[in-house]
Length: 264
Ligand SMILES: [Mg+2]
Image 1 (cartoon, rainbow, N blue to C red):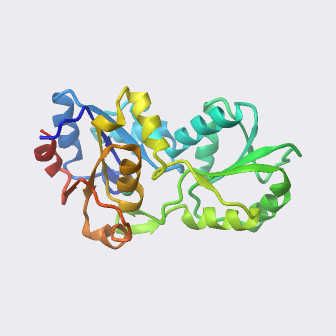
Image 2: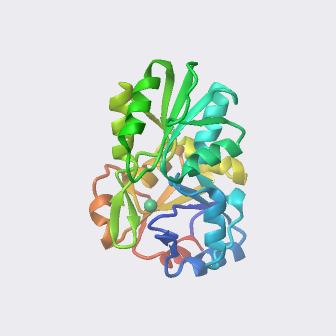
């Protein structure tokens, strides 16, 4: 038994793969809820909105409320508002416009790099994309003199998908750094800010929380930086990605159901 109040689950490779809930996930969540643990989801995805994730989890018997889900777009919205105020233009680069919608829903003034970008100080927020087109690269070059900060919702090298690791946002962020000639600040995991924002929303203290993830570089590193405990879900399909990290998890499991024995 571990002395904690709450559990933050990583999404891709832990609670689900390609939107299909992992075996045992519903049983684990139900068992922890019965024992009154505070539960949340902490995900670096910016390609899907918190509302979409919430609906999709609920439809597969994982009853999470929207406020229990913290995406890297939620973390970015919080940080940009606190640091730059709510009126600074935010140029969003990512798939499906999900990140842009999330930032707009938080009251931020978001714009597309393909549109008419005003010649005023602005920030750029980059996230997961499957392609970066030449027109976007040209737009990024044009706005470069006005960019006062470059943020990445995440820059994971990979994420755990259905058949193994798939490329995360790292290569997109690296391309935008080249185009702007400045480094990006990553706001999602492993930045401990992600845990702070998630814990604040849930009324948890990071030191009384365990993060369950499948990535040493993202989940385990983030937990260590935030002063939370970590549990690595080891999986043969993502093993090659997971071994890149230099961080040691507090606990390791080979399947999600083992979490019940570990925590209860
Ligand atoms: Mg993961």
